[in-house]
Length: 178
Image (cartoon, rainbow, N blue to C red; front, side, top):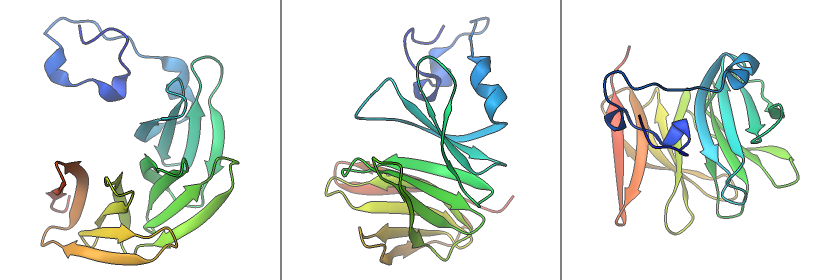
């Protein structure tokens, strides 16, 4: 079933039929209890990054060997990851709604405090602008390289869960409480 040679984060349920067998890599699941987001390193597509919940950690997952801890944050969850045009890894958190930047040397800095409890998704647009989907309150934010936060829109729902840039348009998926 599915598509051979494709990572789990790229698979969709429509690619499977009833009775298809799915093989998972259990050594990765032992290291951290909840994976909140996965990101492929564009500089090395053999490396995956994993943001975790319950522990608030970010790992690099090489194709062989054990996961490498990149950052043990004080936050409870890393909900979103994105690799920027500068090659840095960006991470959105909860419950304080922070956005961290991890440079190529592994140096971690707090890029922005969003004023929301959750940073559910991070996306870069075609111009290299970082945008964040947040919850409590539900907003779409633009974050400059210097960490300046601008609100692009505020929505009636409690959470903006996902962002997508497509053909120069920004789409936002929302959710209510609970």
